[in-house]
Image (cartoon, rainbow, N blue to C red; front, side, top):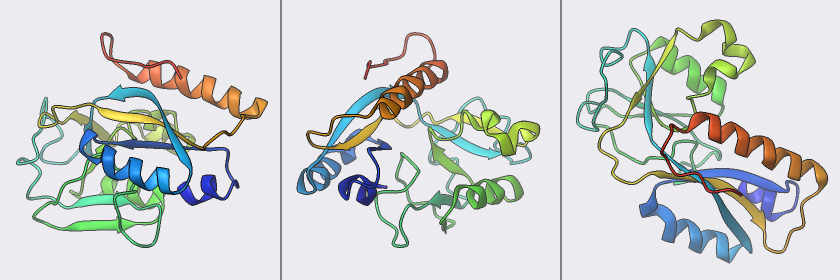
Length: 188
């Protein structure tokens, strides 16, 4: 995704990451003449199947997750800090790397693997999952003191097309629906 923005095949790319990764990501973006614009700061969730042993918990910690495998959707064939997951961790039961979102969802729905991030609170609006909304549970992650930074990356100096402007308006509206009252939302 970042390569597509850098090579101007895409006008923008959506990213999310932990505060600790900001210097590393900023260095990477600067070296490629890319700019990050924050749209919101959101809470992290753990996503599990409804039959997962932790599915009924009010909140979970990283320690609670140590006996289950983490599934990540990697945007590249080489694992890096640019995965779909906004929170990095090393589970003791291993990590399952997949290269598409549908496979990630299938692994979560059919195993005791989990995912962490902000990417799934809206899974019930995804056409494929519209009739399957009871299969997944989103549980707040209690260990994370800082919010997840969510925003978009553009080529420095890029002027948006009308389509990109409309997309950003829709994205901001969608983010606002996902954020609980009293949380931080920065207008893009």
